[in-house]
Image (tube, rainbow, N blue to C red):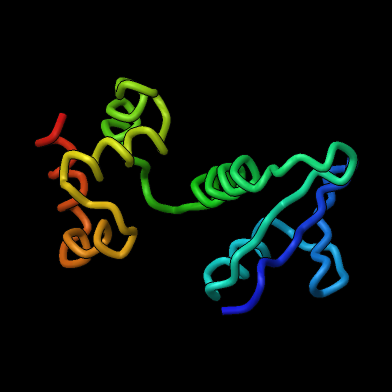
Length: 124
């Protein structure tokens, strides 16, 4: 894995990959992440780290493009969770499962795509 790739977000909402010296889309950022690269997104004006919010936006866009019907019950469980956020919900799941590492978190759910939903239902 290489160094962290810096992506600058300009006021016009364009995203600039300083590694490739070109503008990129959210889909291209998703591909960079899928390839195993680490990214950091910086607001060019304020210099604030906006990596988290950019990745949330990326996930939202991916969900909008998905042809699969979303799981409304899962969303209700997330909203009803203590923090009401995906991050908080997943951390609570990790804690209840005694899991810390992302690889460990994924392992129990790799065999059956419905098992994550079933485990979530059981835990709540």
